[in-house]
Amino acid sequence: MDRHGLEMSETGAEGVRHYERALDALLFFRPDVATESEAARAASPRSPMAHAFAAYLGCLGTEPADVDDARERMAAYLPGLGEVTEREALHLAAARAWIEGDLVLASLVLQEIVAAHPRDALALGGRGVGGGWGGPSTRLLHG
Image (tube, rainbow, N blue to C red; front, side, top):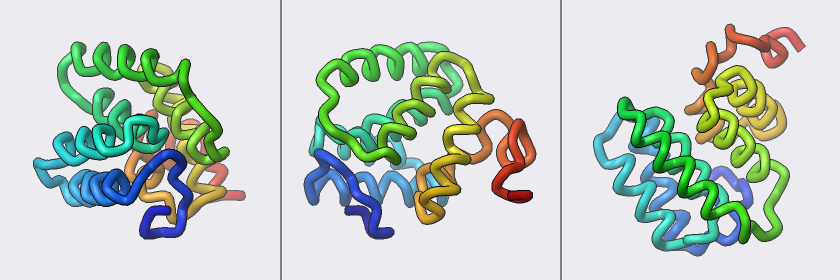
């Protein structure tokens, strides 16, 4: 579990520590976000949350090659996917949508995650995708 009590399938203690550090780095604009994200994947190579995080970072990059790398890593990861929680499956769906350029779908999925799991810092951090809370869906603000 992460520090907010959210389950993290296939993620050991070291992977969770790096994931949490990567989240802090993302939310506080620290330069070690990519390093910590990759360390989470290395420590827990089957972790859906570590893979979703890395995919989001690839999409945030300024180089098209970053998205291509995220697409390749996700394609390599998904065939061996084991049982995941609904929240983790939604993160992977949002990451796939973002990788494929569907920012509206990615935003809607992230909003669904936050509606069900309001302490999910990764979903909250990605809320600006596709227009954020004022974008394609205002369901969270207006019921």
